[in-house]
Amino acid sequence: MRVSKLFTKTSKSAPADEVAKNAQLLIRAGYVHKEMAGVYSYLPLGLRVLNNIAQIVREEMDAIGGQELLMPALQVKERYEATGRWDDAVVDNWFKTKLANGAELGLGFSHEENLVPIIKQLATSYKDLPIAPYQIQTKFRNELRSKSGLMRGREFIMKDMYSFAITQAQHDEFYALVQAAYKRVYERLGLGERTVMALASGGSFSKYSHEFQTFSEAGEDLLFKTTDGVWHNREIAPSQISKPNESEALAEYKDVEGEGVVGVQALLEHLQITIEKSTKTLIYTTDAGEAIMAAVRSDYDVNELKLCEAVGCKTVSLASAETVREKTGAEIGYAGIVNVPEGVRIFLDDSLKGLCNFETGANKTHYHAVNVNFGRDIKAPERFYDFKTAREGDLDPASGEPMEVRKAIEVGNIFSLGTKFSQPFDLRVPDEHGEVITLIMGCYGIGVSRAMGTIAELMSDDKGLVWHDNIAPYRVYLARLGSDEVVVRAADELYASLQEAGVSVLYDDRDARPGDKFADADLLGLPHRVVVSAKTVEQGVFEYKKRTEQESAMVETEKLKDLLTAQK
Ligand code: ATP
Ligand code: MG
Image (cartoon, rainbow, N blue to C red; front, side, top):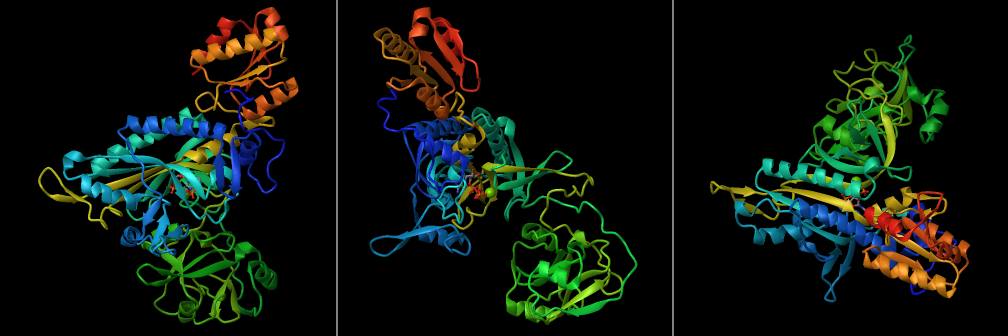
């Protein structure tokens, strides 16, 4: 491609409203165009990168038996009603639209409901299994915040694969193959060294799912590494307070009035206590309809996923004001673990273990209890649980050692779905004994456009993007300096011969100043730069430099070709 023909241009600045480094660089280099927050056009260079990433993903999915298909963006409402996912309270990021006749449709945020009915028609025997269709498609998600450039799109490209197996063993075997394939994908994308597999919540059918997380300060996720070397997403990370609560002489229990004191900070000032002496109690309703109390030290938050595990339920949601009144006998804001009416189960986080002379709501409107102690004011609990959200500095409860904490970008995610989707569609197939079995499913996502954003974010320097060979839009930036006939001829010839040798080249044939060409070469980030000038022609060499290196070298034609063809 000749730069003189390329319709995109580089620019010195990105739109003022673009805060993400990846998008700023990609916009400035002319790879993408911003339409609105979370929505980008992929311009020719950007599309080449996106396609290169997609191709690596495609090759690795094909290698484990994946079969590519393409499903529509428009989604049928009734299918989602069958699985309970049409409801905005269940899926909060739907984009919905309507047919001309008024019938409602959705724009696909995921495609289980689309694929399961297809497989139901086509898979009729255990001999058809396992199967793993996948697609590389645009997904639509009405993300609340979309400030991370390509890393959190409202319209973005995802590879999603779905597996169908007739036995758990068959499912597990394929799941392991996907884990290995994902590892290869991230290695080929150049993210291997910074990407780890982490445990995340597994939903109703398995304890954990697995996320592929790339370490980055720009990441939206926080990972905790336990002493056994396993990374955990914060949503499920275990935690123990770093300093045990200290015992002290018991002080006199008091109910203190606090009408109009709103918020933790104000309360601490009002009561003249530290946050470590304060606790908060939340009333939740479980999926079984039971109202329970959960208390943590006020410097922590309740992690609802971990709380579910402690309670032994599937979901919890904050109780209504009415339930709070009924269960505590007080208005919202005064719930606590003293004077709890009979019959309400109380769950205590282990941040309360050993806590002396602490504060809790008095279960009396406008009152807080202070100098509360276990064994005196409240029955000592049989056990404490760990349902707090882990914080930096917390210990691994299993070892008592501090946990390493890293920010990361979720670049992929694999999930065992059990029969969550096959059951509502009655996707059943006879096994070898003639017994009809509900199929076991898995789903496997890779954020293709997020990977592009991640690479741009991480592999760049103060001059611009730094692509590596596998995904660069072109491998070589050929800069011609000057327009003397001999220089033009030498550059044209090199351009033609590199292409003939299968090396993709972006040929800067413009009559621009060398400094501008070099600045563009750096901003565009192609892995190799070759300069042809009067000086190089005179010496019968080319000037060669890698994007990742500072120094250039003079090399002869054969050596240059070796350098450029050897590295693919
Ligand atoms: P996240 O936790 O980041 O919101 P998710 O867990 O909802 O993502 P999945 O539904 O499992 O993600 O999607 C599979 C993959 O698609 C993710 O691992 C991620 O790489 C990518 N992805 C998800 N949401 C977005 C988005 N809004 N923009 C770009 N990529 C995304
Ligand atoms: Mg996620």
